[in-house]
Image (cartoon, rainbow, N blue to C red; front, side):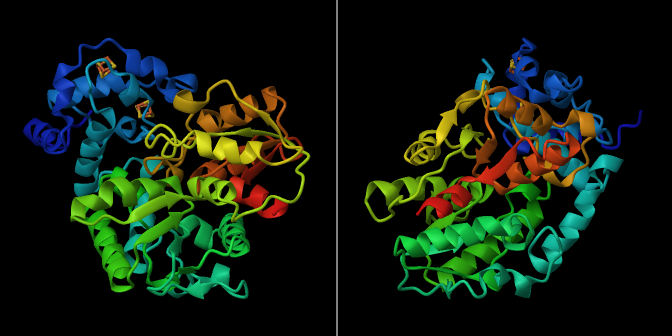
Length: 383
Ligand code: SF4
Ligand code: SF4
């Protein structure tokens, strides 16, 4: 076992991010009992907290990259320890020293893509708005009500582009005057910050903020809870405040105000998965459920781990880019929970969750048993 950094540096880094609250940890172990990792393998965030405050962390170890920043332990810790911040501090050291264990190495390619093209796939920046071509979606201008920011995944990923297309069709049906900024947008930077690349996060954030200000943006509707969280809670660190609305909140508002009319039936049995960054991190639990419950003929079922206790999909904290062994994926468990309550569709509102669930659907051979849907894909079918 090699300790790459001097212990003092670990202590300082942990302190600099506000993680020194870990010194109040009395090793009760509640965090370990609620952490989803312990449903699939042994993992102790309690031990990581203990090592970090004494500067004894193994910076080369895979353990410090496992946390998916789901927020369950933070929510339950009786001493107010910020486990996620401590994990990020340790990852900052790993990133600074370029010490990446094998399962984490794909991050290097992601960083390259973000630096060169503003998205984690390294896809051409000029193609970011291609999903909208032929769909009658305009370029955003200052007189418009809404900027729709679709997220890198919904802009480029073959499966997930349908979220952006469905959202645009809903906004058009509701008569919302909206536009996109396409090629001038960058990734929001949320996940790369959680992997410890603070400098790259700042660059992406500053470029986005400049782009929003230059174009007169005031109100932004987003598809991803990760964009929602960053724009709402982290961009204010740069002394800006845009009005940020997640699409589930906007759907709820549009339906309640009568701007969006539900006309069709949806004869399916569905259950809803709370994305960590929409639910636990931001308290948005009711709006997506209310929207689904307004759809005629839709049968709604609640899973065992829901609301504050939602089971993480495993894709947060940059884990969506890392390798996870097939039998260690939380998303496998979530699909089983959905089937257990009799659902034929697992609905959520996050491109990362859908990515993880679609992978598990293939791994578990559930393609004929369970469909994965974004909430916008359902609403677009019934208006
Ligand atoms: S729940 Fe909090 S106090 Fe208890 S072991 Fe975990 S970090 Fe320490
Ligand atoms: S944030 Fe979630 S994944 Fe990370 S250590 Fe806490 S409970 Fe585990």
